[in-house]
Amino acid sequence: MQRINRCRHSRVHQWIKAGPLTINEFKGFLAAIYNMGLNKRPTLQCYWKKGKQEYKWFRKMFPRNRFQLILKFLHVVDNRKISGRNDPTYDPSAKFKPILDSLNMRSKYLYTPERNLSIDESLVGTRARSVMTQYIPSKSHKFGIKLWMLVESISGYLIHSTVYRGRRFDPVPDGELQSSMVVKSLLNVSCLFDKGYHVFCDSFFSSLSLASELLLNRTFMTGTLRSNRPMPQRIKNPELRPDEYVFMRRQETLVCAYRQNKRKPVRLVSTFCKAGVSPRGKPTAIESYSKNMGGVDRNDMFTAFYNDERKTVKMWKKIMFNLFQRFMINAYILYKKNSNNPRPLSRLQFIHEVVESLSMEHMRDRFPGQLENRKKELRRLANGKVKDCVVCSYRSNGRRKRSRLQCGRCLRGVHSLCFNRHLVLCDEQ
Image 1 (tube, rainbow, N blue to C red):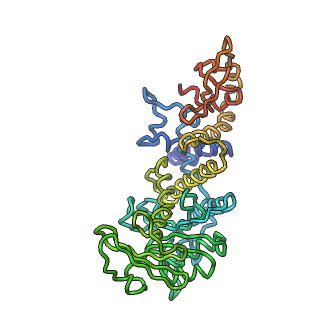
Image 2 (cartoon, rainbow, N blue to C red):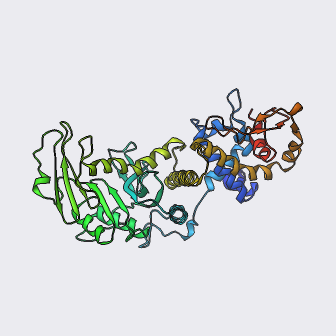
Image 3 (spheres, rainbow, N blue to C red):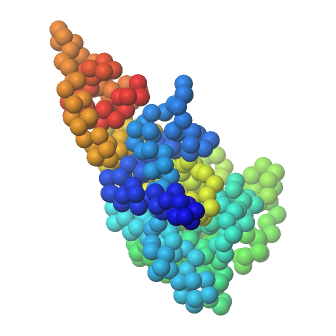
């Protein structure tokens, strides 16, 4: 009898009792995840607490227990179809690989990147006990899952990303450097060879041999060089005074060394740049590298702004939510590149719009009659007066739009087409 009572109160029993997850409900779940990044609280329970600082939107979207059940039982693949640790076909990234594959496929399908690209590593912070966990002391997280990323240099648009699973699952062929293999693999799987792209890499990836191999595939490369890599002796041990530089060229490959002020010399290889000097006295190749190398860092910065990171027992869920944020970043970059408005939405405003759009269908299913009744509260302003629409009007960036209608509950201006989206947040006022 005690066992039966325990089963009745178990999470599995609660899930069966609550019913299956629908598509609209999952959209509402994603809206809640994105909104948590905009309104950060110390714990998940804080979003459902009542009091002077309560946030009614989350309670209106989901009961707390229902949200926690979805979060607990959320899976990307069927665990019964995943190979065990002792199986030769075991893949430690199997639980989140479909999300990563979907991100890569959609990113390449929806956008053709500009000429300048950058390749670097990114770290999803976690101390999980996994063969994929890496220790990189130079990163802010230090421990985490490493992602190799190919992005557009200026915008930070993610083109392709792969997860590093460790030496056992990602071995390096004899006679080849891991760094060179990563660069060629990312460009090859993205179908960017033989198209004249220009790739920027840091000293971990760059080498003279890699630059020559990429040039054979009509792909240019610019990157810094480590002093232990093969290079001319004049570049390897340059005797330079502050603000001095030296160039050497062999066919299409240019190498240079430059010392800024009293810092250590910087060595660089390029198959694209010329041996020129800018008006500020710097080699143009180094200025081009400084301008275009930070694409991955820019993508990481955008991810960290509105990412609600929390401790979790399931390491793959943390990676999955990190990838969801990168979906949002790519979507915003596409919006800006295709917007005809001289003052497009800011990223914060864009995420607000996405949250409202995702939550609307779930709210209709959750309160079908209530939303229809609330539409009757839309009133016309007297004497031809107008008000700024609370949904689509933004004074800060010049997108001011006025309406002759107002919400009968909060008395704020709103267009008739915007009223459905306004209903979701009206109770917060």
